[in-house]
Image (cartoon, rainbow, N blue to C red; front, side, top):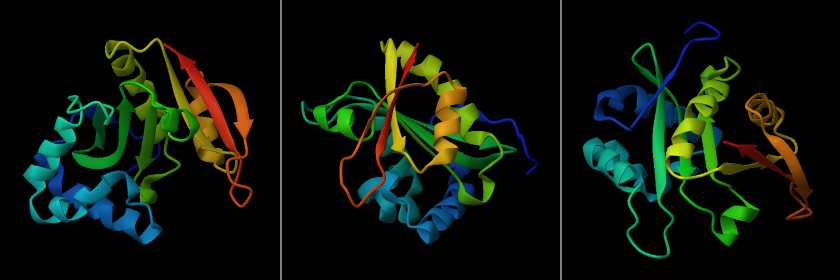
Length: 175
């Protein structure tokens, strides 16, 4: 894959099983499979069920779980990253997480994929009824800071949540 490759956001799809599972192995090596939740085994054993769960996350099931739209970035018929949009904020998401979270496959970072994903996800957030979105990142995450700021993120606050961890940055993007 060339630097600056063009990506497209799509709903999760079984068509990307092989490249998704390859990406998952990279995330595991990095210690970052957190976004897959408890569905890790399902992804490997029954990918169709995993995809169905990700799609179902956009529907409110109860008052405790915030609906979340998952989108996958694909390029050259390959899964290259993921982005998710919480439809609203809880107190916990206001502190850590925000409305939008994303990850680029580790071997493909530095090619503008995250910047493209966020740019393409902002209109989706608007269709969900959001007028502005919160994104949080660690103060030490220079790549994420660049992605957010390139997409119009306005830094409103920096906080220490845990003295043993980097400070959190709180960005808002008006839609």
